Length: 231
Image 1 (cartoon, rainbow, N blue to C red):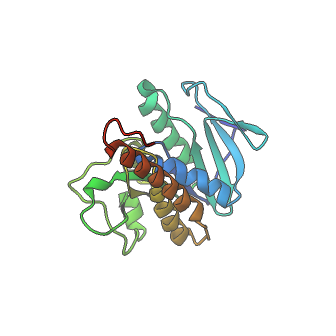
Image 2 (cartoon, rainbow, N blue to C red):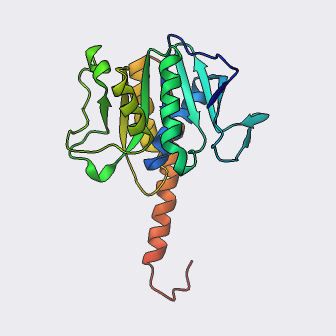
Image 3 (cartoon, one colour):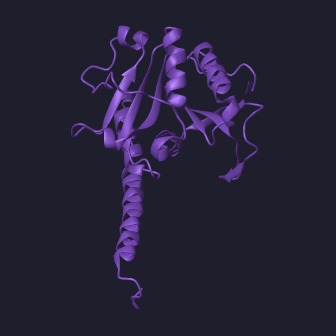
């Protein structure tokens, strides 16, 4: 793994990172914040086992892994996941760079299977011992001790815990079968409170309503009697 430009750092900032997972909650949260906060691209993460993909955005190429800055925040946007057999290596090396880059804390965003919801809460948080020692997240709903976190968020939390680095995850309850912009809106609102910025989540809510409306139409169509002449 190489950082381009070489020697790039994110000193004194809080890093927000999200990945493709349940509901694509982490990815869409970061993608939305990059636009909403008018963040500036700061550096690239060049990983030799990244999938060979690229996309065009705002007159330039969006590479697989990029770091943006907006005031006292840094944002890690991951367009794709590393190839499966290299996932552990990637997240281990990523954690090492983050801890050596000058970041003061890390906020990881992920989705949580909404079928596990036991109350009216919209999210749960999990944090490292180092984060707890600094005061933690007072008053926030803690992830249940008998549950498991999996995927990139788990890999990074493990690395940060073993190295006594302050980090936490905000896990928004999400639909497990599709992209869930409503869960991303929950995460954005949490982060806005935590880091004292303003964000209009209306586009995310609108996106969720469009998806839900389309799914409802599909369900209603499937319920119609076979052979119906109406479409």
